Amino acid sequence: MQPKQAGLTGKYIWTAGVIVLLSVLIFIKFARDLQENQLERFDRTYIEWIQSHIGPELTVWMKGITGLGSFLTLFVLLLVSVSLMVWRRKKWEALFFLVAVTGGMLFNQLLKRIFERERPMLRRIVEETGYSFPSGHSMASIVFYGMLAMLLLMFVKSPVWKLAIAAAAGGLVVMIGVSRIYLGVHYPSDVVAGFAAGAAWLTVCGVGLQAVLASRRS
Image 1 (tube, rainbow, N blue to C red):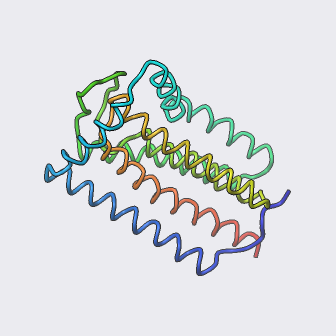
Image 2: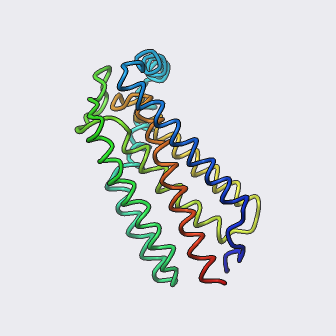
Image 3: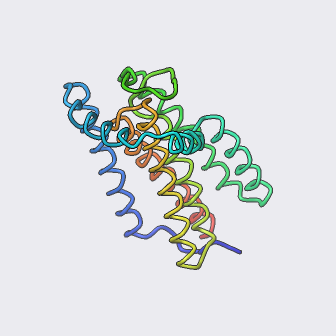
């Protein structure tokens, strides 16, 4: 099945620009509040609410969900996905997928080094090392699963399947973020900032891919 042959439209570019702008503004807002020590109330409110639901069975589920956003899991899934794309002669899709995910992870490490926020110490269920802001799991998951969904949507015509793919990817990404708060290894602001930075990077990579594919079709 071939993807739709539509190129980049003004509406598509405008929408992508709005997403990038809003994502950057959200990240800047949380980064500024972090530097000015104004995140305590926000973080405490959501940590208390999410961790009020802690229980043995839910903890097992949350550990499993958070594993879907781990470096090892995403690395394996990335290798499998890229290999399948190359095998199906989707070399540009494979290249942009690889650049988006690996670039997003490197960008996250750079941001962590810049802000150097220590992880929360409240009710820690699992142990993690490294800095906290922005959340690596949140940023990597929105880039990986978002890019995967974007590629799948290019080859699906059914509105029902499009909705199902978007909902599944979005729901999984949100749950990975929530799991990081539940397990006590990230502040809520870390997760939101990770989503914002990841969404901006994902959108840029998505526009780049669409531009390349459109130019090759013309």
